[in-house]
Image 1 (cartoon, rainbow, N blue to C red):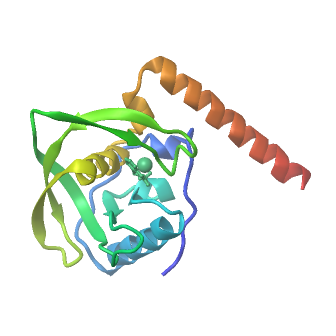
Image 2: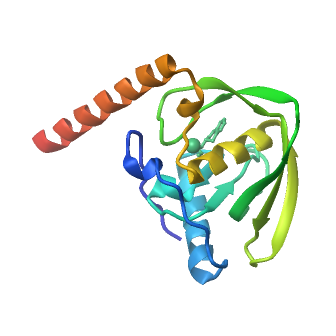
Length: 176
Ligand code: GNR
Ligand code: NI
């Protein structure tokens, strides 16, 4: 397994629509395993392939608490096939939007169809934080960040700060 660098906004690779995988083969399984390792180290509860610069429709998640055994989920080509009428609001964060958090409303429950690690078609129904996290990851596959679901005012404040932090990091690297 290998750790992969995580892209941060603004970055055009985070705005692109990712391509479906043809099938879950050894290459896709390797990507899933590398993404999980990257996510655990970060640490985060979900990660989408575009966040590590790979334009493929692959996501991983693990919502187990620190004291609980790991419960990794690995999904390829995830599709939302049903959403609840009811919405739920969660405070979201994103490894590609470091140090910024905001409340986002999304459908409270979802049903997702996907290909599993063995390339079998499966469906899961989720509610609570898992439903929010699945939608957050699927958004990444369509080039959408949680800040795109905020008002333009809030989004632009965050984007300006991220850009400033990026420029400072480049300057720091150049002088080191
Ligand atoms: O680690 C993460 N936490 C989180 C919290 C609330 C809603 C969504 C998330 S996903 C995020 C990791 C990440 O950026 N996934 O794309
Ligand atoms: Ni994210």
